[in-house]
Image (cartoon, rainbow, N blue to C red):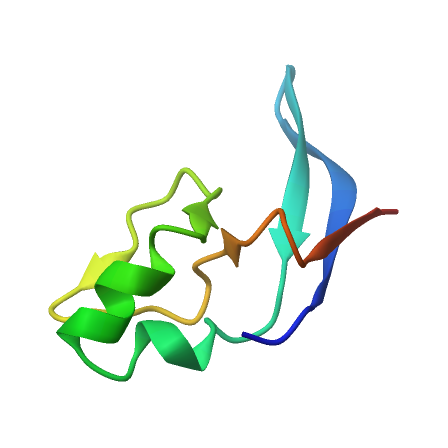
Length: 79
């Protein structure tokens, strides 16, 4: 597992008179250990946490906009 710097940027979305503020988190591609096989994925998910609210699984593969964080080794950078 390789440590990563994960970027969280504050965004405000406006639709007519409704304003929605949130952090948009980007971390690059899903860690490779989650793609190798079922056993490696099971072990990796003991350490990585899915932090995005969007559905992630598409068949047996993770979409590229999924964000998994290992709080032990990753650094979160708030912009």
